[in-house]
Image (cartoon, rainbow, N blue to C red; front, side):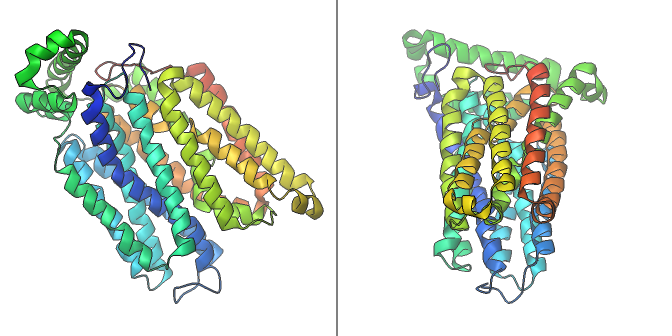
Length: 468
């Protein structure tokens, strides 16, 4: 988390960027709780101790999981259209609405259809987070710490997932929504305290407001600008140069030049879309997200005698550690190195997990009942340092600057389709083909996408957001 210039993230220039990023991630944390809550709750709803008045079958589980992707797809379209029209900050406000509806509907569920609808709204929140969130944070962040701040999203998501894993074990089903719904309310209140991004304001021609926002996020006090220039000339002048470069880019190549179909279909843009799409395929077909949704079922099917819900909690702790490690290492080793390391580690762990389940008898499984937990923990740890934590950081950095918001929306639409397909098919593979075959297929996906990224993925560490 130290740049090539030796600037610490605790430097005065970065304080407001860090604070606003942490505030914005209250929603990420709360969304993570909703994701983690699903896995143990589905097991409870399928048991005789279900707190609801209706049953949930395997087919219901499949739809509850996959309909998330449909909500995300609709959200990608909406937020992609609204990103430049109403500004980043207004879009950030809107994220809280479907998330609160998710908890309200779960609380009042009278049939399995309620769970379908609530899960759809969870997808709406997710789609918006992955379209607006990375763009918002990358636009307020200095390039020296942009990778660290954008990768923090996955750490907050992982913390939320862990909390979501834990809550159903100790709290009543109907109590959890009453507690968690306060988080989006706090998020909205804090969001009122800071301005829109200077990039968004420049796009709408609000030059004075854009400069004020830039000074706010870079902690530059106009009254003390002379003194600060003398005391820390390099950092202040660098910040100002970044803003002037961005301003010139938006005025001469952004706001004044309308976006055309050719901006999306030229050779350079298509190449970047291809890389982004492969990263999305890798993210979903590697099962990094499916594992989160069906983790308790995976442990239950692995043959381990350990408590599946306890294993799920341990795995959640590992995921937090991995995403935190990614935040520390991303500016030191770069995006590509961590992504390839992550992909290779996932493939190795899943091949090992599948082999253990397939080639050991019941006695061996009982004797080494810790192995499924260790293997899946290894998969989650390696996924967290790249595939989980850096996917959306790399995508937002690699897409063309002129059409970044629109291209981000298109990419997330594709990712949402992959989410729907993966979450719909995963229970079928898990319960019909077996966990070993499921793990082998996901590992093969890691191998093929990893080879592609090794050849074609450029390093985006330190890349200017004003340039392609």
